Length: 135
Length: 135
Length: 135
Length: 135
Image 1: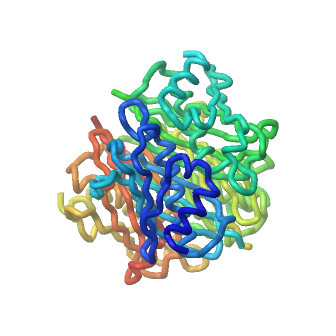
Image 2: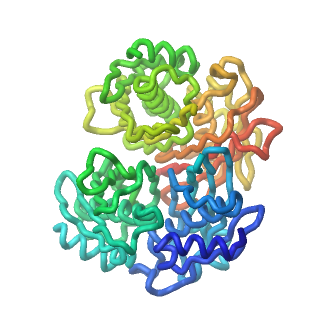
C-alpha cells in the first residue's frame, strides 16, 4: 500500500484520525513518517498539543507501519501501548517516525519517535507498542 | 474539587475531552468514575470505540483522580502511560475507574480499569500511568 | 497444579528463582501469592531489595498464576512487562499478589501488586504484563 | 566515570549484577554497551537466558548510562521499566546498548536495545525506562 492509501484507510476507519487531520507523509521499507498538522483547536492551555492527540498520532503511526509491511490487515488491533512524554511539543506540526522492532506471525512490536517539525533531535514522546495480527 | 468542577476543568483544558463528551460521574476518597457516553461518531468499523478514545478516557480519568486528591494542579502532566487492550468495548457507554497507587511529592502513579457499562467484571482495557506534579 | 508443584516447576526452570528463594504461598481461583524471603544477600546499599529482584518476583508471580490456571504450559513466555516502583521495600519478606486480567487463546494479561510483609496497604511496586501462550 | 568504574560501582551495589557477571564494555557520549557473558547457570530449559536476567541487564544498562552522564548519583532509582521480549536469545553473550532519550532535572528516560552477540540486527528485547534523580 502507498502512503496515501494507508492515510485514507486509517482516516476512514478511525474518526479521531480525521479529527486530528492525520497525514502519512512517507511509507517505505524503513518505516513510516506520520504528521499531525498544527491546528489551534488541538492545543491545550499552555500552548501545547494534548496528550491524547500525541497518543493518537503514536497509535496511528504504528498502525500505518503495520499496514505498510503487511498490506490491508484491517483487523489488526493494538494490544499494548507504552508512551513516555518527554518535552512539550512546540506550536508546529507534530511528526512521528515509526518502525517495526519485531514482526512475528502473531504480532508486530513497533517503536515510534515523536518530535516537533524542525526539531528532530529533541523527542516530544516515545512510544513502544504491540499490534495483534489476525491469525 | 467536586466531580462537576473536575469535569468542567478537564473539558475546558482538553479539546479531546470535549470531543468525546467526557463525564466525571463520581469523585471521592477512593477514586474516580469517568465515562464516555456512547456516540456513533466515536465508533470504528466493526462497531467498537477506537483505541485513541479509550486512551483519552484512561488519561482523563488519571487526571481527574489527581485533581480530586490535590485540588487545582493544572500544571500536572502525564509523564508515562501504559495500556493493555483486553476485549472489544461493547456499543454502550465506556466507564473508567481510576485510583492512585502512590502519591509522592513529585508524582502520582495511577491505575485505571475500563469496562463497558453493565459489564464491570470484564475489563476492556487496563491503564497504569504517572502524572508529574509541579514542585 | 498445586502451589508446591508450581513452585518446584518455576525453581527448576528458572535459576534466578532459586537464587532469590522464591516461594509460592498460595494458589487458587483468585490468583497467586508469591514470596521472596528476606535474605541479606539480596539487599543493595541503603538496605532495600534490588530492582531486578523485585522484577524477578513480579515475573515469577505472573508465571505462577498462568500455570495455576492453565496447568503445565512450560512454553509460555513473557512478551511484555511493565513495572512501576513505588516505595522502597522494607527489610522483610517481599510478597506478590498476582491475578489474570484477561485470558485469551493467545495470551494472558496479568497484574501483580507487590508489598512488604505486614504492610499490604502500601505497594512497593505494581506490575502488568503479558504471557504469550503456545497455540 | 569510566566504564570500569561504573562496572565496579554497579556490581558492588547490586548483588544480582555480580551474579550475572555484568560487564560494561563501553561508555561514552553516545551511551553504554553492557554485557552478560554466556554462563550455563543462567540458562533456562530450552537453552535461553531467563527473562529476569534480560531485565536485570536492561536495568543495569540504564543505570550505567545515567552514571556515565551524571557521575556518581548512587541514589538514582528506577521508577518505571517497560520491556518487550522479541526473540529468544542465542546461547552466546547478551549485549545491551543504552542511551538517554531525555534528561531533565528530575529524571532520565532511557532506551535499551538488547541483542545476542554477533546478531545486532535482531533484537532480543527492547526496554524503555525512567530513573528518578535525587533533587
